[in-house]
Image 1 (cartoon, one colour):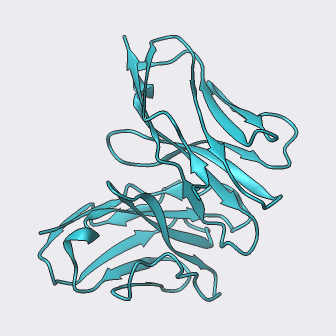
Image 2: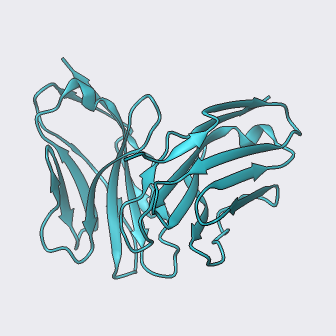
Length: 114
Length: 116
């Protein structure tokens, strides 16, 4: 079946602009995660959604970052007033349920802030 | 304190030989899971193998096996019969138990290069 998909695959933006990144999880997967991969910080957790529960936002680096998940499926990660340090690959992952161990990752969105 | 440590930034292996990628972890949670992911140059994270903290036997998936030594808190990945396509970054990751949102904590990765 189809894996996790993300769009856009690449995004170049100017400092101060807002960007939206999209994630379509594997059909039927209830848990959805966003991670960020940057040269200086490695792979780091951003946010977690599970069903209708309140999301775990503990990894969001600042209040410029927000995310939502509509209808328990598609998720968007929004970065407001982008900064150069936001340049990174943003990875989305999903799992069948939180207790199901394996998280399957999408191809990522490469964000470059000029 | 770093929870996942991969001490080998880069490794070389000859094609068809076996290679071990090291991973140590630190947790006080009795319930945890350990994962290995492969990231080729294309950037996608590919799941390779999983080991649960209560699993009695080492996990195996084809040419991949996980050498799980619980007392030493190590979870090394062994790749047998290396192939050129195995050249990639390899990440060890840990998922701690309930209450942590099951997020993965990643090591810094090991870049493996398979020589023909």
